[in-house]
Image (tube, rainbow, N blue to C red; front, side, top):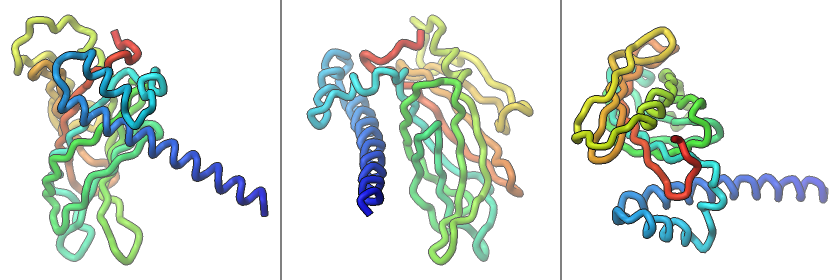
Length: 223
């Protein structure tokens, strides 16, 4: 009996640890959105999060990847005439999801999900589900992509580029889930990438998403 109680406590501790890290990442992302352009002030704000030292805890993080899940296009029907879709985003052990859009096969989320990146070789995996109240949620397709083209762009000398400058394109191929050219460009001091990904293992459906890289003060260097 005591062993069961101890294991239960360990399990709760691990769950709380992951919840705490995800909360820190959300807090950092919010601070980045609202912070001044002075990186010293931003580092001070991050360091004071909930009285902890997230910079020390997350010293292996290369940066943050903000994924804007914009919309679904011609998604599969899983209910009588429509679906109640949402998107689950995974990278390594991280997992985030959008809200549910009811009764739509062309849902518009325009929702930002932010992941911490420690290994740029890990793919980002997207799975679309149909929310069901009385049974297990149905899969509506899946896709994955790697962020290496975005990372390689970050290593270029981008000083002096005008906002809106196209840097490079990634072509659709059998090795990716792209349904069209993916453009990587410079926008307001950030490198962003627009993607249309075709869902796999389903009769139809695409997702439109945008990636944005966010550097963190005192994070491990990409360059």
